[in-house]
Image (tube, rainbow, N blue to C red; front, side, top):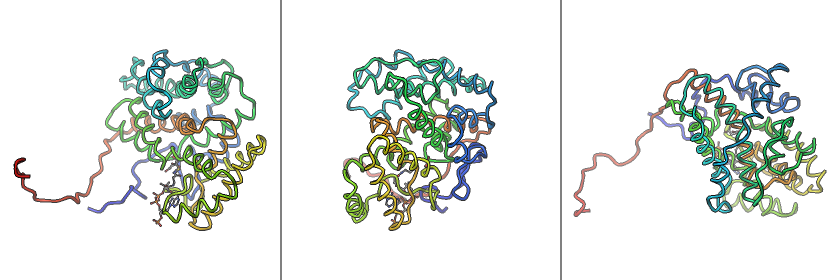
Length: 371
Ligand SMILES: CC(=O)SCCNC(=O)CCNC(=O)[C@H](O)C(C)(C)COP(=O)(O)OP(=O)(O)OC[C@H]1O[C@@H](n2cnc3c(N)ncnc32)[C@H](O)[C@@H]1OP(=O)(O)O
Ligand SMILES: O=C([O-])CC(=O)C(=O)O
């Protein structure tokens, strides 16, 4: 037996959801560039789940269903109030809240296709309210109910801030949601597929995926990028900081990728947004610092910026709390996880690889008194 550390290059599933070919990302055959420029997040979710773009009526019905399912049970809000919320990371709260939501869904263990479609809508709708409500409860504020007529991105911001967002804010969040929606067999998506391949339910698959996304080598990197930028503080400190990190063999967050070698096609969209939004809010230094780091790491190590790198300065310029960056990533990626979970159910086989044993052999049990 031979092992491939980190399963690098191993093709572990067939999928019709998204592809990365020659550093080009597509959702159901549509390039990420096309979708980022033109699509609403709701259209993208419909696309990932139905493998076609919706027509006007289908989109209107889908948006209505999402809106009607956005409210979360009071028990979830009460749960947030029941622990020391200031010491709990919002990704941990999200992980538990989604698991908790499953307890309030009478169809949680109904594995029929119809029930899974309904759960898909509920989960995608409610995650926005969970993330926003958690943030408000933590700030000692009242939870805000979603508002009819607002898009998914706008409603998230509305539930978060209790005021209708500007068109520019909605455009930025919508684009970020489109860009993060799916990404082939990344670690969290693989986790969700491994989980549901045992024929476990959708809530379990999503809870498992959130757990995997939380780590700083994956979705947690966007928050880590902002911590790094904060630590650097000023543009002139960027290169000395990065040099020191590299000398200590520490990783630069938001840089590098397992699959992309020449560049992550999502990063350029976030970079452009970062430039525009930081300039508009007089926060240019975060963008300038990021560019310096990106150029230096590219030059020194040949590593490209990934999706998490510029999303940090984008969210910061929108005034979003740093520890909500990964939950916002999760909110978007729910759509991809759900698409992959549905695909796994459609053509399931238990996922169970092998391990090469490298531990001691032929040992003899020794009585506890003689050890
Ligand atoms: C949404 C997402 O999940 S995107 C990824 C988000 N994660 C990050 O931004 C964290 C920082 N980046 C990394 O840790 C990595 O680039 C990963 C985990 C994303 C992918 O990398 P892998 O394919 O596993 O590469 P691996 O970690 O084995 O690194 C290979 C080499 O590149 C170096 N390297 C990779 N990423 C970085 C980085 N961000 N900073 C400095 N060096 C790096 C490693 O030190 C290693 O160098 P060596 O061969 O001299 O020892
Ligand atoms: O694909 C990966 O390994 C990580 C990533 O960029 C994502 O999940 O968006």
